[in-house]
Length: 231
Image 1 (cartoon, one colour):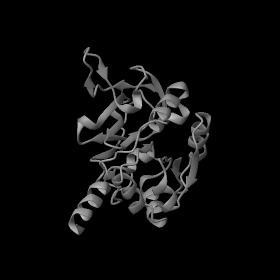
Image 2 (tube, rainbow, N blue to C red):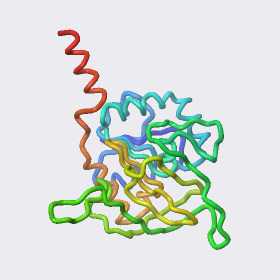
Image 3 (cartoon, rainbow, N blue to C red):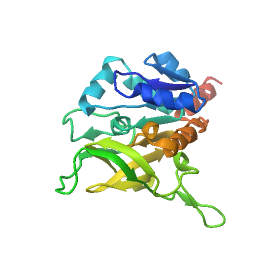
Image 4 (cartoon, rainbow, N blue to C red):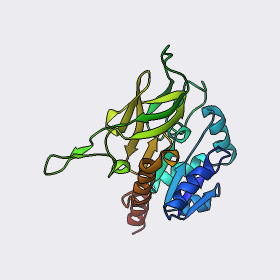
């Protein structure tokens, strides 16, 4: 089951509809027990960084999200959900993000030739994460079977600048270089909306749904350490 975190953000139903189309069982919930028991968890979002963090605190979801990540469950942030995974945003000074990934959310620089917010289709430059034995590029796990320069749908006025380039799996250009997707262990995120990105977006969601839980998670390590101490 794939759980979609309900914190009064928009676009929840669109994500659910895309998953159901793929034949996946999806549940919109803010119940901590249901979220922790899910096979995969998605944090969607449309709106303000500060308001979203207030809602996550209001519904006691911040600790739950950290526990989900620590137990190795595949976790996907979409649009504002990507931004919330980082420490801070220009949009809401003084509001702390989840701090699960390292980087900051900046305002897209003004450009006379471009409208802000960045709204519409834009191509992705996929970043090779490794090479196979034949020298072919291996891209991030969300992009298996997705062609480089595929188009996806964006709606945002703020963008990610990750502190570590190695976690960036895709980028796009719009007034500046935008880190459009990241991957670190069991945590994935994309600034664009896969649920609104046609065949490419559905493939990305399918790839996410096929990612298995990390067995050597922090939670497992802690349990093993506790068992050894008891013995």
